[in-house]
Every structure is written in C-alpha cells, then in structure tokens.
Amino acid sequence: MQNLTHYIGGAHAEGRSGRYADVFNPATGEVQSRAPLASREEIDLAVETAQKAQPGWAATNPQRRARVMMEFVRLLNRDMDKLAEALSREHGKTIPDAKGDVQRGLEVVEFCIGAPHLLKGEYTDGAGPGIDMYSMRQPLGVSAGITPFNFPAMIPMWMFAPAIACGNAFILKPSERAPSVPMMLAELMEEAGLPKGILQVVNGDKDAVDAILEHEGIASVGFVGSTPIAEYIYGKGCAHGKRVQCFGGAKNHMIIMPDADMEKAADALVGAGYGAAGERCMAISVAVPVGDETADRLIAALKPRIESLKVGPYTSGDDVDFGPVITAAAKENILKLVQSGVDAGAELVVDGRDFGLQGYENGFFVGAHLFDRVTPDMEIYRKEIFGPVLSTVRAGSYEEALKLAMDHEMGNGTAIFTRDGDAARDFANRVNVGMVGINVPIPVPLAYHSFGGWKKSAFGDLNQHGTDSFKFYTKTKTVTARWPSGIKDGGEFNFKPMD
Image (cartoon, rainbow, N blue to C red; front, side, top):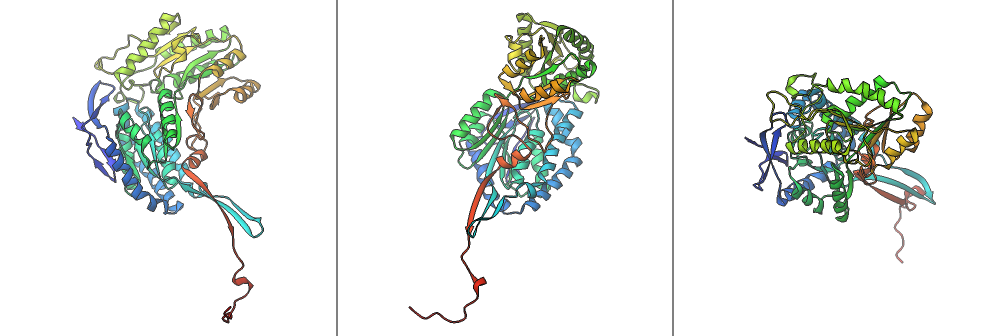
C-alpha cells in the first residue's frame, strides 16, 4: 500500500494529520494507494511557503514567466503517455480520453504564453491639463483551486496556469479520489523553471477546504464540482473577503429538430452522453426531439449504437468506449436514480442494470442506459446523474423544447441539431445557458474563449480561461500622474539668494 504525499515548497511532504483517504482502482475496486488529508497546520505551511515565494515571482517580468509556460507545454507533450496512464489508473477513463484531459489543459497553458500581451494595461495621454492616466494589472498574491475528480489534469491547469502566469502563487487542493496527476504537474512546472513554492499541492477533504476558505493569506479561490458545494464555497469564500468563482452541476439538453441529420445527431448524442461514463459537467444527459416522428427516428437510431458500446478497463485497448465510474457509491447512486425513473413510468429502452464484466466483478462498472418518455417532474430529469444515462424528453414544438432548457435550474451547456439557420440563431440568442452548440454536442470553448455556465451552474462574475481568467487572477490599479515643470524650462547655475 503506497501512501501518497503533499507537494510543498518544491518537495514531497508526508501527511502529518494521521488521516488518509483510500484511492481506488475503479476497474478492480481495489485500494491502490492512500492520499493524506491535510490539517489546518499543513494548509498554513503551504500558504506561508507560497507567501514567501510569490513576491519574487511577481517581480519576474511577464515574458520570462511565459517562457516557463512554453517549457511546461513541451514537458506535457513529452510525458503525455505517462500522465494519461496515471490518470486512467485512478479515474478509470480510457487512455484516449485521458490524453484529451491533458490536452485540453495544455491548450490553456498555450494561451497563457500570451501573458505579456494579456497583462498590458491602458493609458490615456492628456486626461487633463498636464495629467496622464494609466492602469496596471497586478497579481492578487496567493490563489487557491479546489478541483474535481473527473478532470484531474485539465481543470487544475485551467486554474493554476493563468494564476501563475499573472504572477500569483497557487495552492491546489485536488480531489482525494484522483490525486497523483496534479502532483506530477507540479513537478513538471518546476522542471520547466517555476521557482519552488509557487505551485503547492495539498490533498484534503472538507477540513482542508474550510481552512483554505478561512485563511487570510489566500486572496482568491476557484472551484469546480457539484452545485450544493459550489454554493457553500462561494458563500463562505465571499464572507471571508475572497474573490471566488465556482462552477457547479449541469443538466445539458440537446434539441433535435425534425430537419436534423438523424445519423449525425445520434452519433453526437452517444459520444456526448456516454463518453467518460457520463462523468462530465458538459455531458448531454437530456435529448429533446421535437415531434413524435422525430423522437421515434432518434430512438431507432440510438438503440443499436448504445447497445453496441464497449465498456471495460482502460487496459483493454483504445477501442473501449468508456470505463468504470469513480467509486462504488457513485455506481450505487446512478443505479438508484435509474430505478427511480423506471418506478416513475419512464420507458427504459436500453437497460444496463445487469451489466457485468468477467474478471472485474468488483469494479465500478455501470452499463449504458437509455430512457424514453421522461417527463420534467421525474427525479432522473431534475437531478444530475453523472453516469452513462441518457433521458429522452419528447417536445411537441420548438418553443416547448426551448422552454425545457430554459426552465431547468442548471444552465451549463446546451445544443441544437438542425439545418435551419433561423432556428439555430433564435435558439442561440434566446436560451439562458452559458455555452451553446449548434450541431456541436459538447460546446466546450477553446482556450482563448471563456468557459462558464449560467443559473445554478456557476457562481461569480468571471469565467474560466480566456481573457476572463487574467481578469480574475489580477487586480487593477489606476494611476493619475501630473509632473511639475522641471529642467526643460532651463537649468539654473547660480545659487538663489537667501530670503
């Protein structure tokens, strides 16, 4: 049994609290290591170390900070296979999916190489008589990030890359379910030239989270996870005077219009609904076909595709479609919600409840499920399932379909499949959801645009990555300057007479 560590001051640090969390291999159900759960004293040590290192890093010019990011990109590409294997071993996702996890984080790092440009302020010459005015973007100091299990590489990089490029130090509290890759990233950042103490990784549970939220030395906190915890962290962080951005749960709808290419729509739904076993905040979990004929054609196209999905461990090869879910508790919750849908009268078109995999009977595998004739009052519609379950809600018209997406309390992502440009334009303009796809099922923006939902999917004024991230991790200082007349009026070479 391997005991993992924290990463503080450029070195692995043994846990001191005496408390540990089991880290499972989701494919076998076996405990493969233990992650230490930090005490408040360990959080204090990480913050103190970061505070000592940060002023020197902030004084490093942005171009030199960007060079560290450039080298980090090279190292990520060098170690892609190693990172993906470690990620799959703890999370359970397939190797291609794990590489995608790293790649989407890497792309944000690439964007952060533009820090010298992104940190430029504004200047007004002659704002008043002899007065100039200019603004500067300066780092906050020490920032922290609390990240989820489902993207152990991507989401940490979405947070620490812009924070560090802006001149901050960063304390990362990753999920205790998948802690190894974040520590590997910290090691690579220092190999790339980052000074020790600028990026710390501290494992922990709610005690560590509360210590971060209450610590006076931490200026900002980012979070990605469930909506109830996002609300808690946002409220408590703001109450302690921090700048906070929190991203919560999702219930993403995909509207399928009668004119849509049904084969492409079905392919898109299968990838978006079942990839990574549905453990994505941008997964499509609700299909909304418009009209019964459209719904019948969609179900007919989906059923054979879903029934042929290959479920297995990442070690079975790249043709595996998805692996296990993260824990036994997650599996139990998914199956409980599936049963609630059956009990409520939804039609279970594809039933994965009895799925089993020879040799992996103790793994956390869940078969693919497809529901039809789900209604908005059902628990499987209202709640985020976070598993390989797709619900179909039939809509009688475009307006009814739009209303479904707009009335749900979550507003992370949505999509419409249609050949009608007018319908697509109307949908994009009217829907109250943060990220919209038009014939694109998972509309995750590229690194130079911002990522963020609406309604109860996000709390805070600024989104992740893109230019918003540089605003979140800096504060603006505005200077108004007037200079008295000086030597340009001519030098004086004689002493003035004494008054």
